[in-house]
Length: 130
Image 1 (cartoon, rainbow, N blue to C red):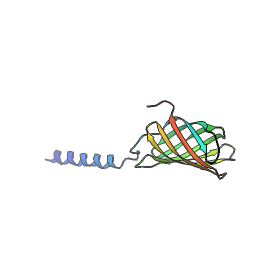
Image 2 (cartoon, rainbow, N blue to C red; image 1 turned 90 degrees about the vertical axis):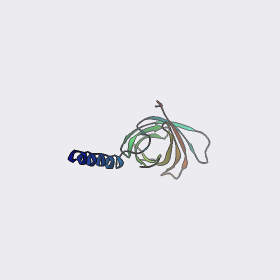
Image 3 (cartoon, rainbow, N blue to C red; image 1 turned 30 degrees about the vertical axis):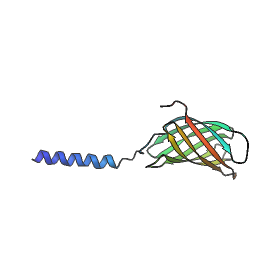
Image 4 (cartoon, one colour; image 1 turned 180 degrees about the vertical axis):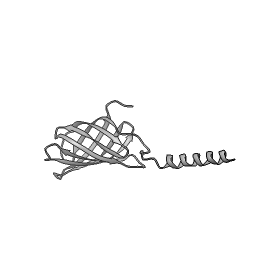
């Protein structure tokens, strides 16, 4: 009987800890991505690449496009595919904020704003689809 009670306690404890995990309940964004962005009110689509590392809910990495090279930091939502990234150009002369969502494991879409009062849309795809 004592062993049966100990087994029941162990099963309950595992269930509680599994339910309180600090890992998002959706895809991990770690990897290399290519993206396109269009600035509102201007013609043309611009291309770039980014590398993202995800640890729990935190995102960090780098991106590079026609506007320069940026350091990235951000976070991904606990329960959904939404995420945000702040980018700061290496010379601190341009910054952006991206609000986006994963459409699938290998695709995202969102809107961005810059510290230069520009806005636009951004779409991205994982370079090596998983």
